[in-house]
Amino acid sequence: MSSRRESAVIVGSLRKGSINRMVAAALIELAPEDIKLGIVEIGQLQLYNQDIDDRPPQEWTDFRERIRGVSAVLFVTPEYNRSIPAALKNALDVGSRPYGKSVWNEKPGAIVSASPSAIGGFGANHHLRQTFVFLNIPCMQQPEVYLSHADKLFDQQGKLTNSDTRRFLQNFMQAYASWVTATANNPNI
Image (cartoon, rainbow, N blue to C red):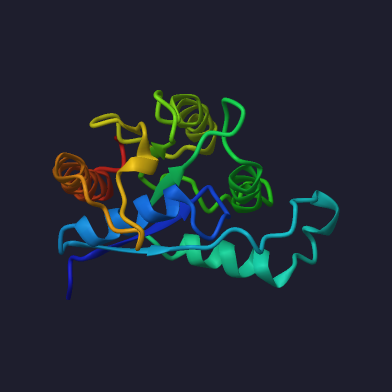
């Protein structure tokens, strides 16, 4: 039996060439062997509307099942207007319903925010942390990741070229894998 844990990676930006999608790809590449990461798409999710939750669209059901089937969730997000993107908020809402059946409950999570700006998506990162409290997602506290000037970290093919950032993200991924294992082994965290 493998002890390898699976983590969903949710990218807050829907843009095809988004910086955050490049960051997510780098994180997946830098992850240690004991954790398997895969991007779970959110752009196809119809806006959450409780009126149709008794007959949910197939994309809601598929998304909920995908998240239910992983051990943890890693969020990689830009900052839009000092908060999280609407698509990410919608994914959180879809996964949290119907009431009492949230797929997020007790799943360890972590947040990486990246932006071309100097503050690296700090507002989005902290708004998402606030949401984690209500959704009962134990949030990895350290190391925090706010990648500033992230548009300068990748080449034309979307590959991470900054060696200091590569080392930092590799250390983050090691800490994340350890966090997922520790939380899974101690649900009282």
